[in-house]
Amino acid sequence: MIQIRLLGLTALIMAVCLTLCFSVAAQQTATADTNYDVTLQLVIGSNEAGLKNDLPSDLGPVSKQIRSNFDFAGYRVASTFFGRIASNGNFDYNSVASIEGKDLSSSVPTFLDWSLRDLHPVAGSRSLQASTFRFGARVPVVVGDSSKGQQGVNYENLGVGLNRIGLNENTPTLIGTLHLPGTTGTIFLVMTIRPTQN
Image (cartoon, rainbow, N blue to C red; front, side):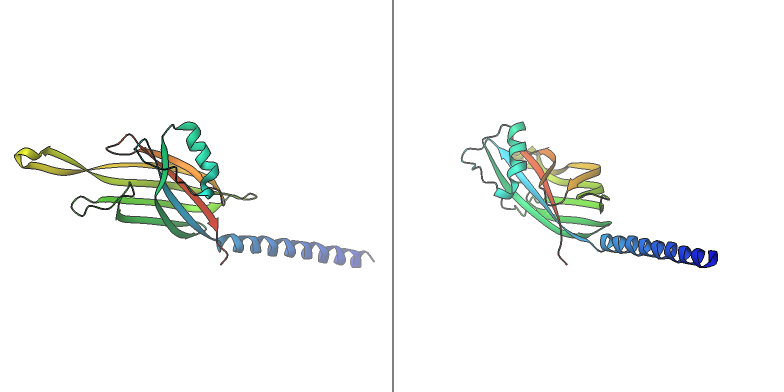
């Protein structure tokens, strides 16, 4: 009788342990296979004449945050960058682009790069964390005296680097600002990360 009870108790404990093991493995598999769509938007705040307040409605909450801390006459989205990253993955972007969202000048281009490293979900929440985020630009600065034909272009680096950044899924988040070269404007870096359906 005691042997039957002991055998039954052992079988029950093994069944519970196996169930827990399979449950943990299924959760880890789901997390490891999750992909995310990453959107980085460069919002320009400026006092330029004629600049409209032209921000999309999905940036509503972050727009209020920006407007409450910065007093510019107008705001607009200058550029939008998109990428896909797997859980615990990395994303790198490098391109010739316009940091202000204006037409490119082929003679003096601007070089943009940004990266997101080790994006992963925070256990038990809808939050995400990345080990690093970096946004950088090499912008042309004209130097010398053009009247003497001694004009040249030097490139200066500007950027934002963050270690251990946290974001909520599906929520546009202001992650940094940069002074806009040659103006009194500011660039606002807004990131949104959404889990994908496939």
